[in-house]
Image (cartoon, rainbow, N blue to C red; front, side):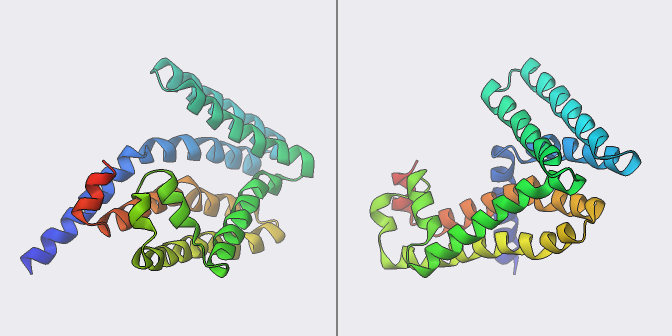
Length: 214
């Protein structure tokens, strides 16, 4: 019993460590703050005010990150994302347009992971070897392919669940509810999913294979 408890604590600690190494807490704050600003502006005034607040918050965070010495490329990319989301409000002429890029990303993710399963080439298998999460020579084994079918299916469900929840809200033009859901289903859920995938794949490797990717 004590061994099982220690194992769970070890897994939790490792998961939290990876979450932090991926910049989880920072990404949650940086991603959520402009979105919250948009929601406040939209709910109290209109979509245009919401966009202005979102952009102002994104620029303020960017300035703070740059002063602290964060990568200019990463910081500017974060601002660019908010700009793109804001542009969709202008393109559609509706507040819900702010969340259209989210839906497009989810649709692409669902199709990509689902199609890779159908053709028998799980996308997570390619991604993990590409970024060096596991050695390419061991990744070709049937047992690894089987594992990545499960990992890829988990990602397929992850993206599809976004669509199942968010598309009806988008169609119904429930902008505030849609925005609230997007705050949870956005960067926070994505960073947790990435950390969970890392832990899942790494724990399935042998000690020799782990040495090969260090």
